[in-house]
Image 1 (cartoon, helix red, strand yellow):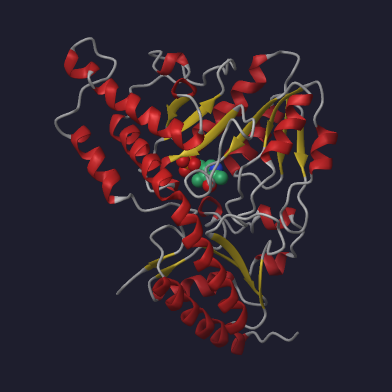
Image 2 (tube, protein in one colour):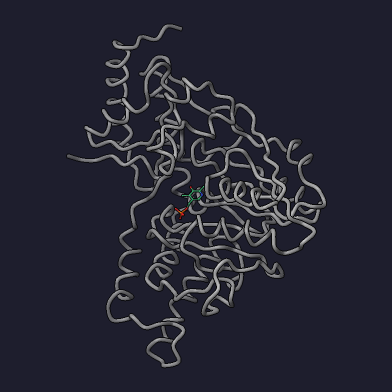
Length: 385
Ligand SMILES: *Cc1c(COP(=O)(O)O)cnc(C)c1O
């Protein structure tokens, strides 16, 4: 059976060229880059090459990139580190629609005495900049606003948010895990101080990521140990993973323009055809001013999203009913909740996320299946306008 993978916001397949680049570092090239002998230290060249590849994708300098174990770690270090920079600044301001890696970390720090301000979003999932302005003050250590939301695909106004943070003397962090490699992002143009990214969301391997820290910002480490990465992130280098992230970044940059156009066209066709063939459906955040090219959440009124997911799954079509991290617990999406979406509607929400590997045939097959599934389920739970 041909499968259709439309859950690229949860994770992506490793690009064949990424795997190819990684393989030697599992076999012959197994040295420790921190070793004195040349067999180990020559591995450092591979790490530095990867650092350059990541830096280019972000418009950053090489020395501003530090390798971590992924998006969650980078987010943790950004928040946990920032509140330690200045004892008079321990406040955190973030949005209601952040990934749990930010939101739960912010809540944990609030439990340790940090002031926490949560910025609201409107019904389309767009950030309320006025609410942000009111929450930021001279005690704010860090403003953390995601680049693009993992459920709605809404792209946040990073430059405006960074300006508000900087006016109050706070550092500006963005969780750009969903944005990097899927839509252009430039840390200089957007005035970003700290940025989190993750390899497995851009066709790289799982368990590796990076944190960009603008030169001049002294972000305290979370891990103490062997002083790798100038002491910003201790721990023996995950050389294969780092090489994979580097290659994935290089490929992402090469494909970025084409992928944005292709995914945008496919997603728009998908949305249009779903609306036509599935009565009672609508697109979440359809009126938002900017969205990722390949991520869309659809609500099928009065239909349980789990039922649709199961029926799609049986036919080899994989989507999601929200973020993978929260699937399994029955709590519905905090993102849709923050947007004021009714709980019953939120339980009818399905996310479809494309990648540069998604084809027209994938979209055709999914739409055809969806229309049949929705029709079948509507016989059990009818929907009337
Ligand atoms: C996936 C994701 C993360 C977590 O990254 P990991 O590398 O899986 O730890 C953080 N933020 C966002 C927005 C994500 O989509």
